[in-house]
Image 1 (cartoon, helix red, strand yellow):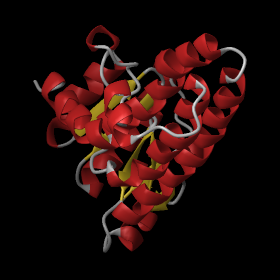
Image 2: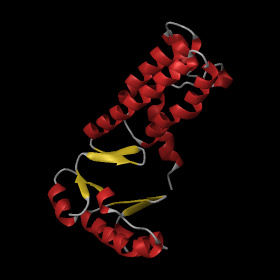
Image 3: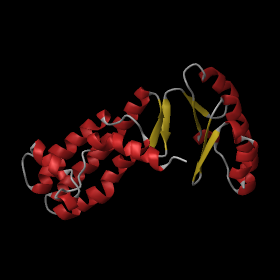
Amino acid sequence: PLIEGLKSHICRDLKQIFYADDAASAGKLANIKGWWTSLQSNGPIYGYHPKPSKTWLIVKPGYYEEAKKLFPDINVTQEGHRYLGSYIGSEEGKAGFVNDEIKEWTKDITGLSEIASSEPQLAYAAFVYGASKRWNFLARTTPGVSVLLNRLEYHIKDVFIPVLLGKLHVPEQLRKIFALPARMGGLSIANICQTAELEYENSILATQE
């Protein structure tokens, strides 16, 4: 009822998204102000309590001061911010976000590499069915990240795969084979730098109305 109420009375001139308990909208500042005010007023009736301290407003350069005046109780940025595992904002902000993610992912890959030295099948399964899903999700939801993911690919190729296979070095030709699906003789360890843009395009096609 809350979503439908906002949609029919407030959201005619903007877009809104609800995912579990995360609410978001996009449009002109004046329209977002009406949406936010209505959400604060009507949300508690349905058990939904918006928290200004955890809320972020992302604006284009030139609208920052106006946004601060309209929304004095929430966080305002013109750089961008993380949103549901992806990032909305400037190219510089996106690059910083991806680099921070890669730092964490490379730590996990290093940990899996240590496991792979004694339990290769376990490490392989954790990588293919667990760890890799995180950067696949990033690629599906964030455009233009293929170049930013190069450092991640280097770590997979030069650290994880050699330990997994008991080799000191993995030639580029073998890396291409390992990227193939298992049904084609590969290992399903995709090169995310080569698949990121396709992942994003497929995501757009799959979610079109």
